[in-house]
View 1: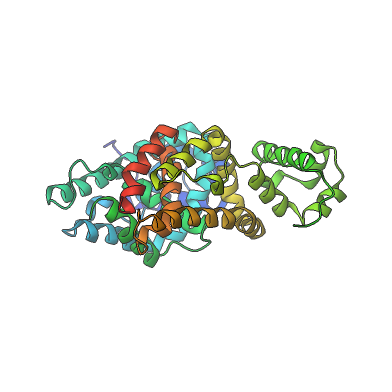
View 2: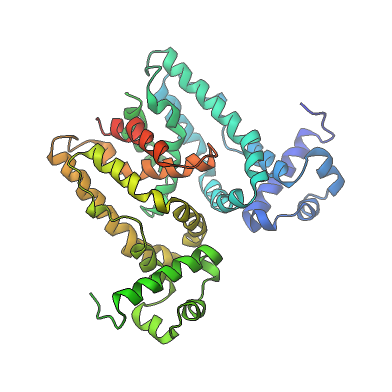
Length: 189
Length: 189
C-alpha cells in the first residue's frame, strides 16, 4: 500500500464525488478541476494521491462497488451466485448508467481501460476464480469443465441483453432465474 | 410492404451511407440533412420513404447486416450456431463500433430503441426461435429446457465481455469455443 495523506473517510467522500460526477457528465467531460472543485480539495492533492484521471476513476469505481466478491462464501456455488445478485441489486441502476457511459470511453481511452483492468477487473476476477475453485474443491463442478472460464461472460450477457433486447430491467428475479437456467447448467449442475 | 419510390439498388446505397455516417459521427450527430447530402437525395424523399431518423437507422442496420438467421439451416443446432459465428465474422469490427455508439443512444432515445425492436430485434429473435424450434423438433434439445430463452443473452455476453474484460477481440475461434463450452451445455447438449 502506498502511504496516504488522506484519511479513509476523506478518501471515501472523494470517491463518492467522482462516481457522482461520472454519472452526471461522463468520462470525457470529467476533469480533475471539476473533481477538485466538487470536493474542495486541491489538484495537487489529487495528483499526489492518484497518478491521473484514469487511476482516480478506476479507484473510485472499485471503492464504491456494492459488494466484494471475496466476502461471499455461503458454502455452495448456487448460494454464492444468488448472493452476488442479491447484494448488487441496490446499485444496479447506477451501475448500468455508469457502464453505458464507460463502454465508449474505454474504447477511446486505452489508459482508462488499463487502469480499470488493474484496479477493478483483475482483483474481482481473482476473487471470482477463488469462489469457483471452492466449488471445484467441494466436488460441485468438474475441474476441467470448460464453462468455468466464462461465468463473467454469461452474467455480462444477462445484464446487457435484458435491457437491450428484452427492453426490461435485469432485476434480482430475472438474474436469479438466469443463474438457474444458464450458469449452473453450463457448469454441469 | 409499403409501396417504394426507390429502386432496391438505390435503397441499398442509401442504407450503406447511413451506416457509414453512423459509424463516423454517432447517432446524435447524424442528421437527415447529412444523409440527404451524402446520398444526393432530397430530405422529402427520405421522409416519404421512412418516417424519421429512428426508422431510417433501424432499416439501414437491418438491411446491411451480414447474415439473415432465417437463411441458416445446417441440419444440427451445433452446425447452425457455428455457421452464425462464421457468417458474422467479416462485419464484426463494424458491428462492435456501431453497438458501442448505439448503447448510449438507445437509452436516451426511446424512439430509436422502439424502431430497432420492431425492425431488427423482433424479426431476428423470431428467426432464432425457429432455428431453436427445429433443434427441439429433431430431439436435440428438450422442449422445456430453460436456457432456450437465453441463447441471445449468452452470445451477447461473449461478444461484450471478451473485449471489456479479457481485452481481446471476440473472433471466430473464441466464439466457436464459447458455443461448445457454454451455449450447448446450457441447452443440455
